[in-house]
Image 1 (tube, helix red, strand yellow):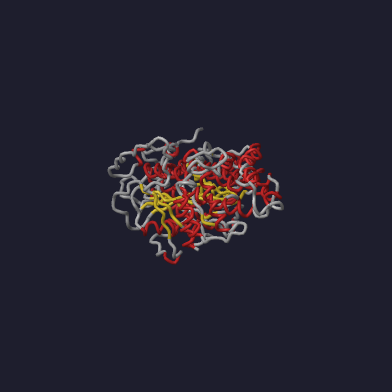
Image 2: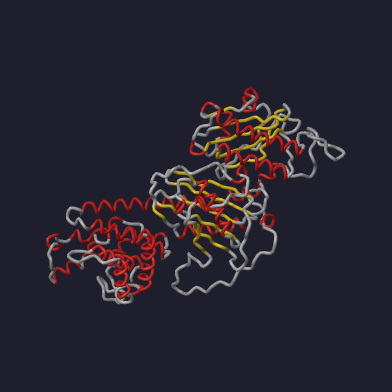
Length: 592
């Protein structure tokens, strides 16, 4: 006999979803499914779930007499299955996991078995333990029972209605649980925030050859130099707004301050904008982990946020990221409609969502809003869907960065091989590479160009290893010697061409001695015909040579070296690159 559909009001379905979501916060379960008994029958139907991989879902119903129900009825309390290989009754719940682990809890109302809570796969791959996990789970089940009593699905206190609803009686005209759960992509009109939407402003005409703007005028950098001590008290209940998940300690405790690549920022602004369109979200924030860098938190909002609201976003981040030092915390905000008064007050509702967690890092999305209104089932599913798209993009970006680091390792190995012949080459190349990457990031170059200039800066002088070391050791070079030295960019290009870099490394190296006025070598390129990476390396190499004091020359101070570069701007160097580099080094000098 087929199981009859379980009818739930939308309010009760939302409450069940909110209660279930606490399993991730309080128990650490990455997946959860809540089943309720069909009144008057022995089967159970799913009313809410979270965390299942895209394209999969837990079974819609568990028929009466199913081995899982028999086992649970025999246990009559929470039990753990950390090895499901000998539990075939759980096979239908193991989709999307190679080693699924379960925490299973029956839910009782006045002695009657009315629900089944199935939790799966703890954060970081840990096992479930009854002694540790049963107590918070029973508290969650207690709140679920309170909701069932309030909505009188299985009977409850007397109500004003002349005919109270008892067991087996279902209100007519209400959607079924299946109807609600199948609403994975709610209609836009149902989730739009109230009030008129602002019309988009006129778009700026893009000139031919313009680079797409990434750091737009609506992006702002925000931070707290004073550290966590400057944060005020948080005006919300911790059990509603703060997840218990915190980031593990990074492998490299001395990480440098970094930036989020331009493409990742742009992609997040798009996803956060969609989230804000389909549900009343005041702000959406993203933290991306990097093993070598402490990157800013990105925060998107439709309307400008007051400093206090931005402070609260950073305060939430400090809860999740205890290993990050307070002075290193920064926030890059982007406002969709900046020409209006700022929002004030305090966030009343907050939802964190862990996207990726790998040895190379993790990503965390945080959704905030001012209204004291819990997220509905449809809203949670919409956030999860868009976050999965963002997670895939960040996974691909992280994989891309790993390939980049592999090429960096090869580049370092090449330099090490020539250290005996030219001991000064490696420190010069690494110093040039560090500054070149910082400058490329500051100029908002696409990720491919940043990676190309990083690797090219390490290898830009590798052609010198192919020259006669005795010639290079001469105190004075003859014109013939100078002609041979000028061949080193071309020698490097020939030497590296078979490595098949995925970025334009070889071309950047070949032209790093070209001049803005066209008097450089080897091809006498001028102005924008010179690759941007070559222009960056040309400026930084000159700066590094001046400040390190090559040969018998005394090193110059950084301000004197910058003055020399400005004198050559427009002749030897790209004026825009010199200006950006001067700003970069001035900031570094002020911090030092």
